[in-house]
Length: 319
Image 1 (cartoon, rainbow, N blue to C red):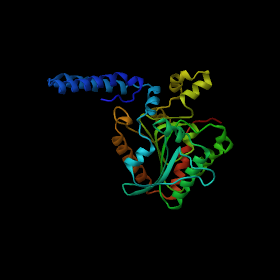
Image 2 (cartoon, one colour):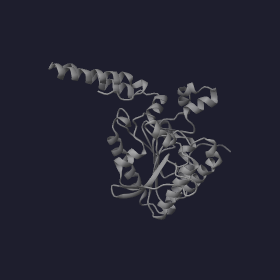
Image 3 (cartoon, helix red, strand yellow):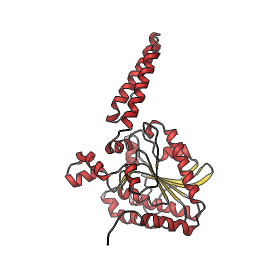
Image 4 (tube, rainbow, N blue to C red):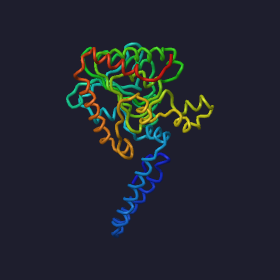
């Protein structure tokens, strides 16, 4: 068995998986009957997985959302849709490879899909800018939103970003304005918008394509005003206290659901989305279709009224 990438808290699981694999190979190679021992170890493995994944800390869930094998936007597009036609460019400056988008069908339902895309190897990570969008990325997304509205096609958004790109060039080209404009314009688009946070949902990087009618999070994704590392670096001048920051920020799907900021948590396979791409894609697809179906009967006026009311209910204030 080739060693798979794993997180530190997964080490005991991976080590036991390797022992089982080695025992199976030995049993076959030496023609020795070890089925009883193997079955016993597999039961132990199942218990270990249950114990580890049912007691994850907030920081461990953040790590899981960044797992190198976790499915990205293009993986979901491949597994959930047919006839995807990718559209490029913002018609002002460039084509931002950190965001992909285009028309597709999900079980016959036409949709406009827009999502942030990360890379798996070094070359792809640099090409995708680690999923961090530039201003032209937000303007590209907005162009596609307008196109969906023009043809009366619902919008599906997949969020997975450590934040908007903070470089000087991005600031010079109006990063904050691009995000703010998207937030305003998305609040009044006349088509249904369904959002799924599939991994990381950080700060304005997420909010710039994150205003919609139904917002869902995968079980091991996170959503916050800032990443734990950036928060700890600002507050304590020590990025090493990210675990402490994650606890304070309450970034997990359960936390965000409790705050009333999302509408639903989508369960992942017991060992995370990275362990079974097909299973999580099937689950996400079903939830997306149900969400669109729940919005079908609304008039444009009702859709916009409910969307604005949803965001006005968020947070608390005193006069």
